[in-house]
Amino acid sequence: MKNRFTSMIAIGAVGVLALAGCASTSADEVETVGNGNDDQKAIDIAVFNGWDEGVASSELWKAILDEKGYTANLKYANVSPVFVGLSTGEYDFTLDVWAPNTHKEYIDKYQGDITDLGTWNDEASLTIAVNEDAPIDSLTELAANADLFGNRIVGIEPGAGLTGAVTDKVIPTYGLDNMEYLTSSTAAMLTELTAATTAGENIVVTLWQPHWVYSSIGLKNLKDPENTLGDAEGLHAYGKSTFKADYPQAAKWLGDYKMDLDQLGSLEKAMFVDYDGKDFGPIVAQWIKDNQDYVDSLTS
Image (cartoon, rainbow, N blue to C red; front, side, top):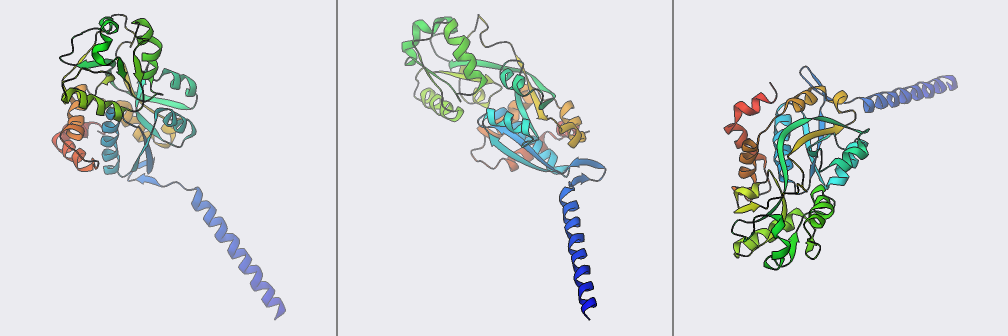
């Protein structure tokens, strides 16, 4: 009887170890999309807070990937944390990296830990914009007319590449040191821009194209004869270092992805101008339906 009891304990112990081994193996397994697609199923898309071209393209790709069998999640963060997250693998990819100038500092810093998946638009540009009826047309005129703009330049996030370009190049080049340069957030800048133009007041803001606000508010970009903001840039998709190994099919799609300013402007208008909510799913679904041939071509 004693021997039988001892044997039962031994058998039970073996069973527990076997179950533990099974749990360990199961934990190591990664769920894939299936149906011939070996990409990992879960995919996290990092989105820069306040960068609406990135929000629009990310919402579009979330809808596309979900339809293809992935579980796509949007993860919002500021620029610096996004690059850190890509470098550590916390995020899988992002769609709003501006190169070669705006995000050069981050690309150089993390170049060994992130991977360029491709350029999907090459018409992006940084701008200094004023209300369309403002009395000046060039940055060369701003210092002499600063009082007409309340001696203020309204900017966006302190860590943005655009903010750095304005601080390091625009202000010293055009002698704007006596103007107050306000930096807080894109949302705050847009609030001030809307309020000023509605009240018929002059305002100068840091902006970029593509951006939906150009189709919503009458604006003009100040000429930049010294090219302090640089030439047109590319909008890139960047992934974590192992992205192509973990998501070979998605990497191919993103590498081939192209979207021009008219297409992007149409999507941004539907999301941010014609719609006043936060649930973009139905809006993007309708835009996809209205542009089905183009969307289908992205994964053909």
